[in-house]
Image (cartoon, rainbow, N blue to C red; front, side, top):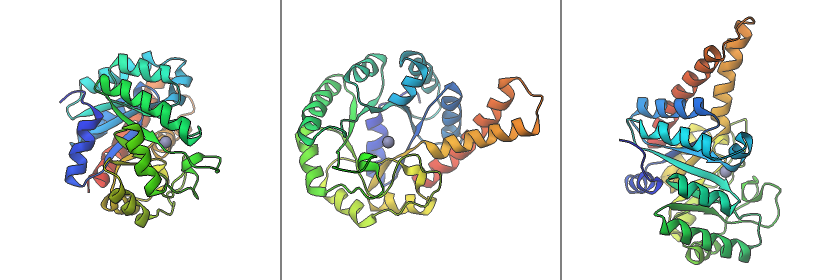
Amino acid sequence: MPLVGTGSIVDTAVRAGRGVGAFNVIGLEHADGLVAGAERAGLPVVLQISENCVRYHGALEPIARATLARARKSQVPVAVHLDHAESEELVDEAIELGFGSVMFDASKQAYEDNVVRTRAVAARCHDAGIWVEAELGEVGGKDGVHAPGARTDPREAAEYVAATGVDALAVAVGTSHTMLTRDAALDFGLIQRLREALAVPLVLHGSSGVSDEDLGTAIRSGMTKINISTHLNKTFTEAVREVLADNPKLVDPRKYLTAGKDALAAETARLLGVLAG
Ligand SMILES: [Zn+2]
């Protein structure tokens, strides 16, 4: 089962009342570890490449082609997603490269500008058969909708989805990005109200800060796509750090990157099991 569209993975999960793991790729080791974990769990996974990751590599194409190639060789369904793209040019490049979906992030824009730009991106993606996620901005909060105090209003969210035609919406329900502890307080009642107000799947960003138990409750309350990056970076880096600390003379990157990759695969398999319920 090779590369698939993100929409097919998410739609199947929505029908089954399950969550979908959407985990971030930084280098080829991450793509390897995430796919190995998904194969071990026998569950699909979405591999995300963020605009920040593109900035790190200096270009989208090399890391995208490597990730897409890894996905095509997978034994479980794997989709490749462009995460937090603020640039329309990057979205167009992802379409050309064969991505399964994009998240267009115009959340820093005023509401009207966000709607106009996101609607145009959604139309272009839909012409190419690509699934689109977007985010509705919130006035105030330096981390936009992902500030811990930010909340998405269900009525405004429904208007936004209708006005833009997007396939999924990232909502603010209590998480924030790059949390190193898993103790975010989620508003489960709001997740339920958003689920009732919207016909499209809900996406939880900043899920690294959410405990296993709360991830399960969030999914039962109506959340579907669960984005996790920082928590898995922590897993990878801690394993590398341990090998380097134990072996001060080690210089072969394959030795310590293998440790990172193996730890990433194990935690990916475990997390996908949690999200599948
Ligand atoms: Zn995010």
